Image (cartoon, rainbow, N blue to C red):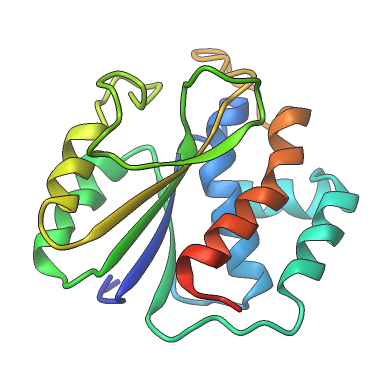
Length: 190
């Protein structure tokens, strides 16, 4: 699948480890709400969203996008856990103007707090992937090559690796409406 859109919104993480699934779940929600068929749907994420996700939060998110249109040149991508090694290096093949990364980020705040981060000013280790891969370096490199990079990060409450436990914690679920607001603003949805 080509990733030649001007704006890429990529969700990173692993849905098997509670809050680490935040990025892919947000992407799945956006794909469904905007009827975006540019990327595959992960059946595990789809099943979670359809059957276990908080229905009140889902309704709140649906109201946020009701009547809104996705701008041309925007693509939602579920990057899973391999984005740092398999997806981020693709920037050199495409002319991305903006990369919005949706993932959990460790920072000094309460679980469920959402904020935006610039990879060029993040402290090393603040955004290490829970699976041991550094993420700041490839994102800094992309941002230094005429592509704006914005990290939409949520402070996780629980990432139980190596124990498998699907489903987001309550604070992270409650953070998703704000996350959607930030993403819609970043991609120019009015």
